[in-house]
Amino acid sequence: MLKNFVAATAAMVAIAGFAGVAHAGKDLDTIKARGSVLCGVSTGLAGFSMADSQGKWTGLDVDVCKAVAAALFGDSGKVKYVPLSAQQRFTALQSGEVDLLSRNTTWTLTRDTSLGLNFTGVVYYDGQGFMVAKKLGVKSARELNGATVCVQPGTTTELNLADYFRANKMTFKPVVIERLEEVEQAFFSGRCDVYTTDASGLAATRATKTSAPDDYLILPEIISKEPLGPAVRHGDDQWADLVRWTLYAMVEAEEYGVTSKNVEEMKSSANPVIKRLLGVTPGMGKMLGVDEDWIVKIVKQVGNYGEAFERNVGKATPLKLERGLNALWTQGGLQYAPPIR
Image 1 (cartoon, rainbow, N blue to C red):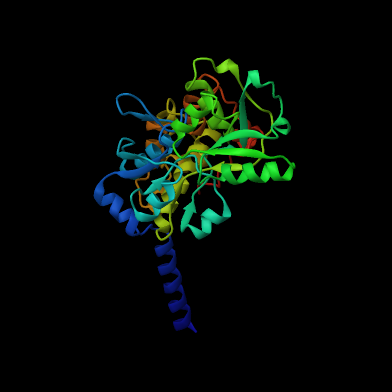
Image 2 (cartoon, rainbow, N blue to C red):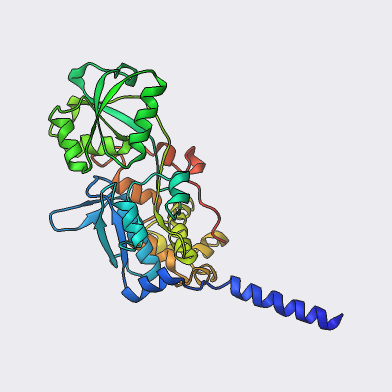
């Protein structure tokens, strides 16, 4: 009996030891050896991923890439951005052209299973809407029967559009254009009556792509659920874990009041949750295979989720987006991080 007990105890210790340490998979090994993250982003969507004239990328999706690099390398600058169209994005991730897709991409069952992807969380809870010129005199999507509609191919937007018009017994003429910039130009030039995409994308386009934003109206109807988030390839759970928990760390930091300005002083907090978050109580970093102060590096270099939201798309930006569904769960929103413990 004693012999069996000793053997069982040894096995349990071995299992516990294995579970407590992250073992890098093939993707994570490749990224570490390269020394940077290849991050797939949009070709230019204000507030989410946009390059300026100097080639500097900013946006909420970009901040996810930066945060992952901060967690892994201790340096948010160790990212190479790869702009991808809606039709290019999944092939680029599947083929290894990018390590991480952080590009206003909707998490759906089909994408999560048949494309060989793992979605790692929701950066922005969105929904599809419609934008029209005010001179059209339309106040509701129910008045769009017979309209020409600009839409990008290879998107959930295209499918939702067809479903909505069919369900409401209306007809429409699609104007399908792949490149975002060309879709926007077609709409503003009057080639189509309506532009449809995620409501956040409509706000970005109206705020930054016309000199007369007040001439355009985003209709009140939201016709779909669009949980937008980062995705990685199947096959490397450790890499997926790191991306997933980086996003959760940003949300949890906001929940506990840890910001880029106070993160150092918060290390002296008596709150055991904050101690674990900031690596004062060690263990969380080891489980992910990164330094114990990984969250300190994320928050100091990129900010918590609320800081990233307000800096990129919040009320003080041209997009002027409310937190809405993207508020913390404690404030009536959907942003909720599993415990980091």
